[in-house]
Length: 234
View (cartoon, rainbow, N blue to C red):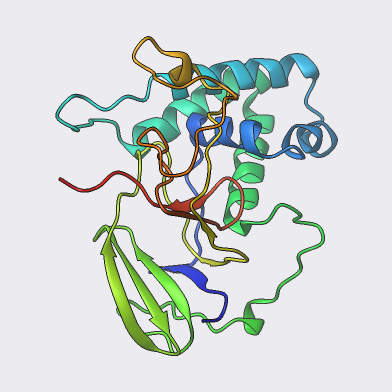
């Protein structure tokens, strides 16, 4: 089976920028902080403040015991805009939101070296279009992921999309690897060290462990996005 292409069901548009998304870039993308300095001329103090408020907001993300959650993407986006404006000002806040949106939408660790023209990819952007190539289509509103091989539907999966504060970016991404039985190293995030947590920051969780949220496989699709297994549905 050829390397799958991951696509959303709508064309590429602006990606809502939230504080948890900002936190994810700080945690997963080593080039992110240096580029904030060179491209946006942010100071170390401003970056430290942004990192702190983003980390604080991520630490608040919790599911209730029933699995219900009341947060919305719109609220998260408005909060991010307000906090970024407080720290770096209105102009730099807008530039920061555009930079994060651009980086996430591109789905590449090296934006400068990746110059892919839209015409080089076969992109099915119309609703309900059946692709003719090999790809994975994630239908966020339907919580469904369809796997196609040379235009034929192989299988559909019911999927979780995550928190509204981590809105799924739309567009086309290329998966370069499928990693089976992945290990998981808990990130340096507040929720990892919470009283109810059974894992520790930086301590590797072996593949197959009930504490490993990645499940049977993970598919990197560009920082900070990832398709992975998870808990068995009840």
